Image 1 (tube, rainbow, N blue to C red):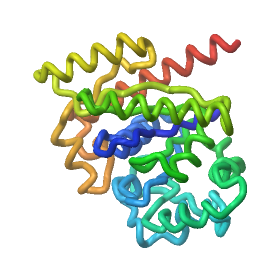
Image 2: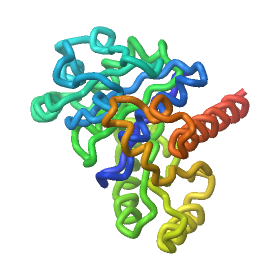
Image 3: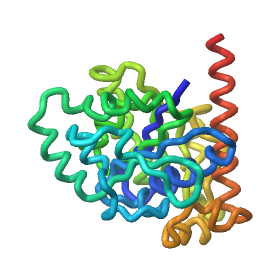
Length: 261
């Protein structure tokens, strides 16, 4: 069964795009069929996969506005073994246009229905704000993966996002759940990081992934080469961490399926 995961946090710079690109590559490395959807007008996930965001025939904007199907828009990056539905700054236009339409929050969900069965995992990279694009992602998804840095302001942002998830669950998507909280850019030498990490585990328990993504130079420089860190430097701490995260997610999913049976 396809798992659709929105990677969201309205706080910028927490590693949403990094997580989308590298988790897609890591899941693909385990022979899973993966689709990465770039819903951020910055188009960083598209570029991070080695795709020129301004040189695509169709983008997520065309899909949302009904000018192209998802199947027509999906492309294969040069390497990585997963599929991408690219995004670029045209998404800003889509957001403005959608405000005038009825059922606007359902556009992505409906557009994906013909293709989701082709993939094991669909990862949606959300913009760093709660807007119509994020709302479309949350309506289309069945789980939300929340990347966050272990710092004071991150906790504040988390509360706001959880409220939004509750509102979406209560209105357009009752199936939506917190898929997991991922600690990113983690530095164990900083006391505050350790304190916030402990608070997260205390409050959210098993919803916090055991895997922690460290601060890592290779991870930070991989996007400038247009490739996931797994292909940039497989032995780096960043690549190993995202492979570990993929493994943890697959174990969780296996346990969930077994429980359902």
